[in-house]
Image (cartoon, helix red, strand yellow):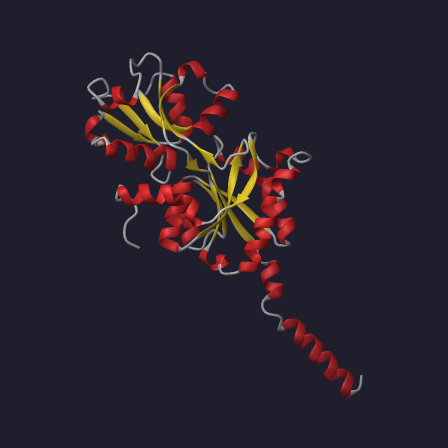
Length: 296
């Protein structure tokens, strides 16, 4: 090889290697965190593996899926760099946005809608027929279950409702628990708890799967519509507008693909729609009003 050819070869290799982190970026796995939407980790991982595979194919990067046990934990993992992408509850997203500038790119659709409802349930033998009963003399000294403190429907929104009515749950109830949504429904319907906070999607699924009886899960309060779960990216990825556009496109493809690939999402979920941070203002307002969204 003469000097001219050597020089040309060296220049070509140098150009390839100097492309701005292209090869490295394409090879680096995207860490995709998902909240505990299903009763256990194994089922949760199996449920969201097809979505992770779809994203890997469309984004042309490996995607590593992992289930995070709590909404609060998922928010922290997105904030501290352990997670790049996350499908998370609205309150968890607002926490991650507030403290670490994570950004929502899309909202999941449930039966075609980007919204859902928080609710409070009891069992038919409790004698409680309304939230007024629960927060009045009839409910004094009862047991009540919240979800974990990173949950929108399981904690923030019912806590806000209690606050607006001048009720401190720790003083009003004899026993207050913080647990998972599935456990709340199971224990309430069994009569082991007097009442608890949940959301319509979880209750619908548990009834449909025969895990609880609808007749034993009595809804005594329902919130105004709330924004559905957020698909969010870390602050670092949010700055890459080209990547965000590719991700939104990949998520928008999920809905039409469900006709031929129904396992891309759990039952009743029908795709994603692009949304920005303003869509989550009702959750942010509740966080500020309750003092749960403190200084950065």
